[in-house]
Length: 143
Image 1 (tube, rainbow, N blue to C red):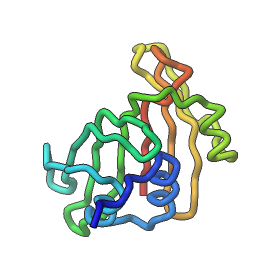
Image 2 (image 1 turned 90 degrees about the horizontal axis):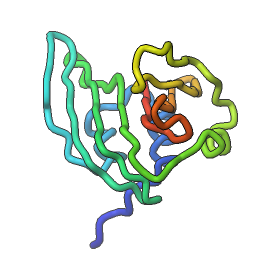
Image 3 (image 1 turned 60 degrees about the vertical axis):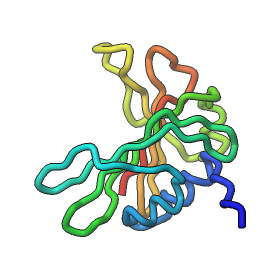
């Protein structure tokens, strides 16, 4: 039996943003990457992985997942998008209700402008870094 095709970026975003606070296992079922513990504090485990190529060819350089220790529920998934260049037009086509929610304040070229979508179960934000403002640099999914 061949392994399942990795999801596209849009499929991944829609699936995870519609899931109520998924567990590590639920995220791993959607994100076909090995995630390893890199840090933890009293309340949260920080896992990281990557690189990963998605089914539509989107290259993720890094993946970070934050999980509550008490419940094993994911609270935040960060995806570092390397290629291809996904523009605001692409984001708005996939998520027409995306609105500008945060802008850089001029402190660093790594600051990002965020376009976000809020659902009943999660928030989804697409970050555009100052040094490459025409392309998505990161995707954040919060539960």
